[in-house]
Image 1 (tube, rainbow, N blue to C red):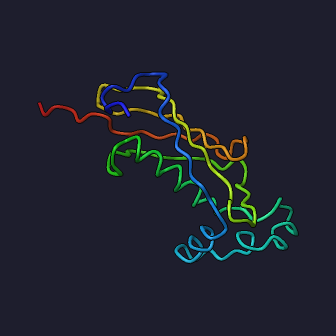
Image 2: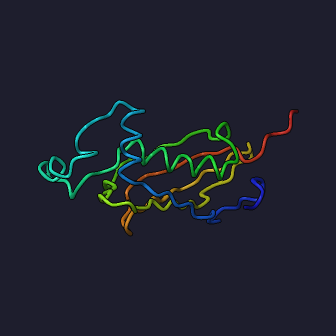
Amino acid sequence: METQSTLTVGQELPVQTFRVTRADLVRYAGASGDFNPIHWSDRIATKVGLPGVIAHGMLTMALVGRAVTGWAGSPDAVIEYGVRFARPVVVPDDDTGTEIEVRAKVRAVADDGSTQLDLTATCAGERVLSQARATIRTARPTPG
């Protein structure tokens, strides 16, 4: 990837893809304490109107955050990050699971060394997040 200081408005960053399986949902449930059955039971998920078992929203957000830290170069270079959930990530009951594809486009580059990114996360061709944005530190200002 290009060096962080070379980001320009309109630039698209390299796509990052994350696979999510039912095993990942089990691990995330254990780590987060969120054992809601919509994240592991097709019967319950469909009973409440979902298309099937869905990934935890915060897991989806964390994966997109992982992409942002990759583009930023380190976790401490992320200044701000926020999303709204638009559509659930349905995770089939097989060994393959599903994929979340994350894209970023540079919205603005500021004089203070920060860069605003517009983020897009899709699963099966559908956007799963809206108003997804991040601000990263792309260059440290020179002490003056």
